[in-house]
Image (cartoon, rainbow, N blue to C red; front, side, top):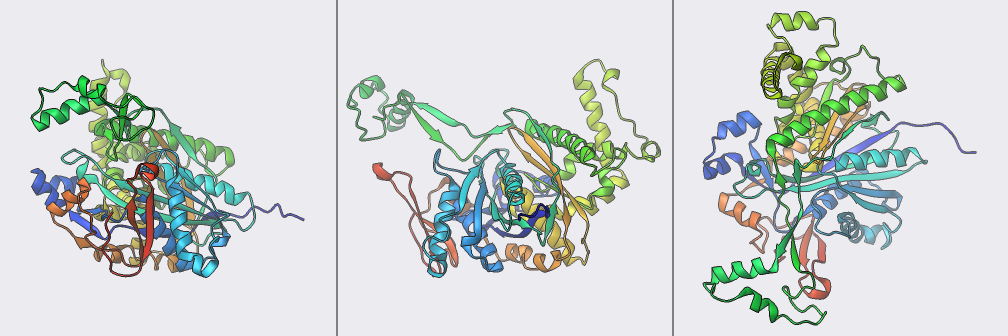
Length: 516
C-alpha cells in the first residue's frame, strides 16, 4: 500500500564553485577613471571573479555538483534529475545541462559504471537571474511527487558586460549546486510562492542580425580598400546550396550571439523593486489562503534572515526601504515610528504629475533607510548575505544561492543558532519576474554549513592584473592562467564545419596547460 504521508522537501546540502582568479575592483576603478569609494562603499564591490580559459558555465556547474556528490558519497544512479538554471548558454538546442551530465559521467564511470547517469533527466531553464529558483521550485514539486527522489539543482553563469560599460564593475562568475530531497537536513521549504511577472526589456541578450553588405563594407574600410564595391563581392559568392565558408551562408543576414547584454540599469532597478514588492503581496495572498500567515502579521518579525538576488552586493539594502516601510505600516507602532523621524509618506493624489510624486516618494524612502529601526533590521537580516557577493560579483542565477551560503556561514562563524528560524527569499530575473518564498532552518544545519568553506576558498584565489583581465574578457589567451587541478576543464571547441561549436571537456588531476 502506498503511503499518503507528505514529508517536507527542501535543500539537503549545498556546494559552490567560483573561478580561481579575481580582479580587485580598485584596479578596474583606476583604469576606468572611476571613484573607488562609490563602487566600494556605494555598491559594496571589492573583487570580481574572472573565469579562466578552461572555464565556462558547464565546467563550473559540473565542478559544483562533483563537490556535492563526493561530500555526500552519493551514488549517481540514485540521482533522478539535474536541472540547470543559466543564461550563459551557447547553443539554441543542446542544453548546457547535457554537457554537465557528460562530464560527470566520465568522472564517475570507473566507480559506478559508464551508464551511471543514463536515467537522469537533465534540462536548462532560462529566465535571466531567476532561472535557478525556477529550477528549484520545479524540482521540489517533483521530489514531493514520489518516494526517495533525489534531484540536483545547479545555477551557473558568467556575468559579463562590455568593456567600459556601466555594468562592467558588477561582473562575476560561478555556480551553486543544491541537493534536493525529502526530509532535508539544511532547509525545509514551504510550498507557498508569491509570483509577479511582466514582459519588459530591462536586460536581455538578443541574437543580433548583421547584414553581409555592412560586414564587407567594414572590412574594406579597415583594409583601406574602400573603393571596392561590396555588392560585386557578394555577387561572386557561389550560388550552390552547399555552404563552404562564412559569407556564403544561405541566410541573407548573419547572426551574432554575444554574452554581453543590452540593458538599462535604472529601469532594471525599478523593475526589480516593483516585481519584488508585487511578489511579496502575492506571497501574502497565498500564505493567507493556506493559513501560513495572518493578515496582521509582518514578515519583519516572521523572517529572521532575508536572502536576495544580488546583481551587486548592496542591491538589497538599497531597494528594501520600500518593503520595510510597507511592512512597518502593518504594525501598531507605525504612526509613532514615522512621527519620531518626521516622516510622512507622500500620496500621488497630492501631486500634479508623476515625476514630482516619484521624487517625493524617493526622498521619503531615503528617510526610511536612515532610521535606526531600518539600520538595525538591515544588519540583522540582510548584511551577512552581502559579504560573499562583495568578493565575487554578480553570478546571475547563482547569486541568490551564494547569498544564502554567505548568510549561513557567517551566522555559523558568529555563533548564532538559526535552528527553527525562517528565511525569506526575494528572487528576481530581468524580463521580468520575481518570486518570494520561505524556508525553515533544520536542526542539522551547522554540521552541513561547516563544510561549505566559502570564505576560506575565496581567500585562496589568485589575483590578476588589468592586462590579464582584459585579455581574458576578449577571449584572446589560449592557455589558462591557473591550470585546472582536480576540476573539469574545457579543452576544445570544434571549428570544422561538420562539428562547429561542439565542446570537449575533461577531468584534470594534473597541472597541465591546454589550448582551447
